Image (cartoon, rainbow, N blue to C red):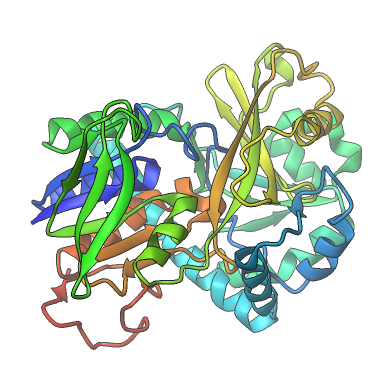
Length: 437
């Protein structure tokens, strides 16, 4: 079939790769001039199956209330006269029960483990280079209450196959000696030795090049102006190429099937087709610092659970990312939140950095209230969804791309996951025309 992928972030490019491998003729539409120029540009860098506890959990409502007045809060709701934000927030609260949290952890872990395996296989096959590190991810806690609260989610993750071991403070320092700088503050941690890290942008660019070698066509600098539907199916996409809507050539591009990988912008486009996707932009921040003191710099990827920050080593760069701000589609860089990250880094690792040379970035993560993405069939018969991955787009990209390529190809994906618009996991019923992968 001719398949059109909408968006060239990490999920769009992995989707294109797996579709091409299944024999489809693939075209990717991207408004930027290259792949991975928005949400995938400077994210935290972790392939983190262990980051499976959703934002919506039993302890979240009280924390969110406490954080409302803090400009540097890890999760900040900027209340707006925005019905989508309020509906998202109500669904978020519905997912804060212990039962829903456990169910969502299961989905996130299953997809994460499948995706990590797909990434490892792809890296071995293609020899992709993207500053990958395979030393695991160490979560450390500087709050006893946070450490105690992590025990039950950790138990659920282990129950579903995630290798996650609780560690003492001294064991944390033994795993990553750079933590000796803040040993007095650490109360414990957890280690996931199979998790990884790497530069998502470098990976996406490298894979896009391999996609082109495999026959995938990328149309960069191409803006989507409208989606044209009739009779319950998508008939084409109205785009403006070249210099954009104002001066570029306007045309209708057609395919047999379409896959929406538009991140935070998926919801408004899906709404034009009559489908409500509960996706809201969560503005995240990252700081990239140069390595100026090798002996005091971390090598193992880290997660500071109290402040919700992740640390990755990307060659001679230190990437620290985190925080989420629900403020609509605002992409203005908030220096208060950027400096809060730098301040925390200097507090934890005073010998590692002085904060000089910091590069700040912000991007819109496509967040669902449950943190479980939309992967599967839409209400429009020939439109498929691969979106809503929130903070785990890099973690879930390869698994999501492989799974949606299976679904488009009429196959049942290998992973046990609640795919959108398809039978519940565990049911043997196949959709019409589908065969086991």
